[in-house]
Image (cartoon, rainbow, N blue to C red; front, side, top):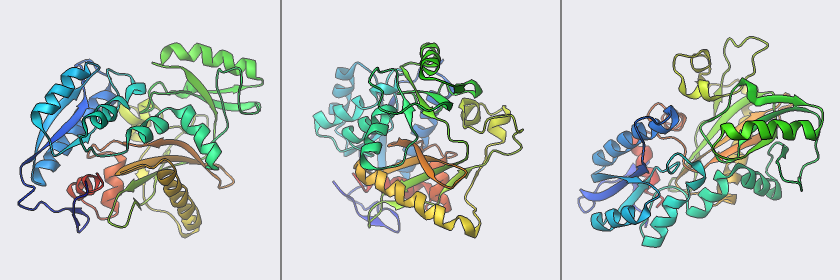
Length: 342
């Protein structure tokens, strides 16, 4: 199903007006952490945009009782589903269940396919595939006995394999170790604080960039690159986008990690390199609609892929809408282009 794209947005012709579109999102309990509550903000903003584009947006909460969700979707008979499910009952590792259900029902939905979402959401699997494809991603160590990477002493950042939105990332997440046994001990200690197992990624001390991609009539468009600036950070403080920087508005980290789209002329070759790698990721994982690739760039100017996000945040104050606006694409036009790539 593909819809006409006009001036970068969806054309709401009379035949399309007031057709039902399901806004599928995770069930969010009142005591959910801030990163999960952000889903409510996204759902509200996207629903309003759909209404302005001529659709009757019907919210449906997705949980592990998928029979209930199936019956609800069958009763609504939507023209399509806008898939905003990023976790299921607080567990990111079940993110692929929503598109799987939609596939089984034959319902068209926005964003990437079940396969692309599964392959990019598990960080270790995604990194293995990136390495096989020749895409640059930092070396990493898992708790598996058959480790694939040669261990080198130095700094590593401990991450959850499945959790996203910087969940569990703090200043203590970066450790310096001399041997693999010491690193594995850190992994074992950190795992209970996450909803899933952890892995260690070589820490890249450098600049951080987000590259957003949006579907268009000529294929995916790389939106203006954004750099996260670590402003007024003292020399001893690690420059990482941790949970505080993303979600705790009263924190030093949140206030001092603005994004910028302005770069000096000498950064032009780097920007082109980041765009090229981002497009390669989009095509290799066969993503659809929209996506974001997060990078660190080391002091030698070499880019390293940290993560690939097949359904980045669409909250109006988020990085993806900001990049779209920087490209001259309004929020409604952005949503229209995502729908246009069903």
